[in-house]
Length: 128
Image (cartoon, rainbow, N blue to C red; front, side):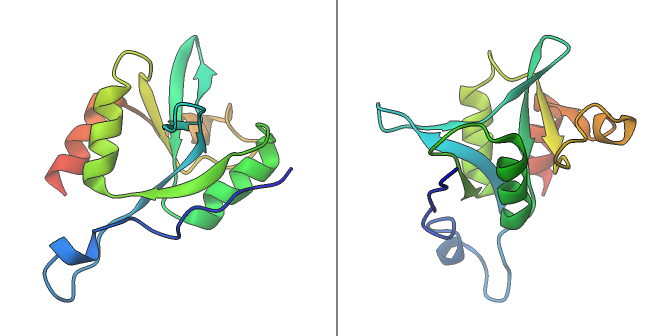
């Protein structure tokens, strides 16, 4: 399964931060749609859509390799602000966020303990 690469980071983050402070980057699995938009990869849990979010690019890549979602999916970094905007845009389709799920372990109790409501996750991004 060929993976495409993103541009290696989040645009503009370092310019808006105080000296010596790094932006917290979250990684999503996305693919470019024919419309030009990047659509995030989601999966279903109990009939509701879950968005996996990763704190490391390599973890997202391992997840892609284990799930084989098809061609064109890649790990892309999102700043907190970009992620908040995306989650607001997906408010009707994504109910949950799962933090750094391990490949092949989505139904294990430990993985389920990482589920957080979309609204609670947005609130945590705003606070940090």
